[in-house]
Image (cartoon, rainbow, N blue to C red; front, side):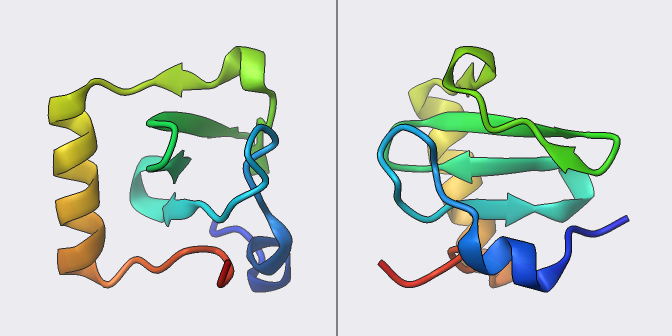
Length: 78
């Protein structure tokens, strides 16, 4: 199930308060500035810094390229 569009409009990284990229098919939100993934479990985003997954440089480049190619835009305009 996709996250509600209204929720996506207000979701921000709990650490830097910036917008996120929503990878719906993979079930996570991504902060490209801090290279962190926030998983979505049972349709609920886990927005805890301590539970975020770090992404290495290669994964980061792949996610940013994928977001651009698939038209994934930030959750809001910063």
